[in-house]
Image (cartoon, rainbow, N blue to C red; front, side, top):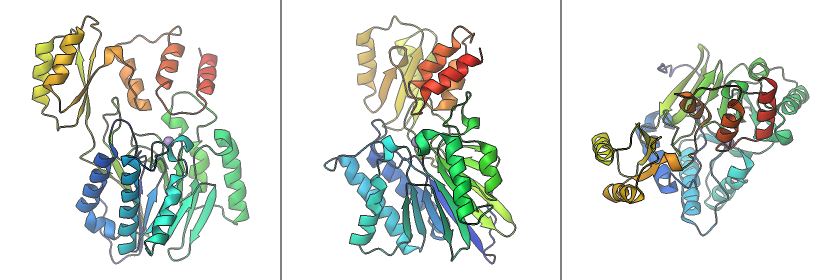
Length: 372
Ligand SMILES: [Mn+2]
């Protein structure tokens, strides 16, 4: 979808960046920050005209030690965003994502803005909150992750009460960090209900949490800006929202430089064939390669030789190692070539959930057991 230029008409443009995960052990902070700068440089013209930049959670992966390189890159990223917003008169909004990832570290934006004397309209939000932007005549509902111990029903009750307090029947836009029923095959109390939020918002519901871009009606899951694991070979990027009198549109903008995590499937392990395949792929230095084979007869010294031969890559042999994956790609991947029966489905799902950062895993399993 292309956004049409309607400069003469009053419009509101919002860019949502999500799940950057600075401090991730696989994809390095420096790489991701360089990518973000390249991305902003590529879209400068478009981004200079934004009204709001939103961060829908999980900007960091963990609590970053102040003496670490990750922390230094994190600070540079905050300065970069603040400076871009200050130069172009763009509002900046940061929503707290998953507690174990964000740990309140986005509060540092306030310090940077204050100490470096930037003039930015900034808000960090870690509670259920409704904001009316007077200048844009635009109302946003913010829903951080894990409210009410991740009881999504309770959280929606709070949303309705808060809207009542504000005398609102609808908001224009929602920013939410969390998962939806449509994202996951089994129900959980942490899943938000699509129809609930669609009924109280006349615009888009812009979300973070699941690292793959997806949509359900006006619910737009941006996905992560970069790639962090194997099993997540989908496109990565950001989402641009445009509100105007002729209708609302969104546009997925791809981060074409996202880190490459490539899986090579081999029925029977053959080192020479593998070397030829890797050479032929011509992946950029720094890429991650996973070799998946059911053949368990691989000689450890041969693995070492292959790793030595391709020192620019990180190579894993997945038959010995569990890998982290996104929900949807994991499910589609594991289902291929595997007979799922009532006897093995619980253990398969349990095993996969191990890799996900999802609360209430036990709820999933209990719910699943009821259906078999
Ligand atoms: Mn999250």
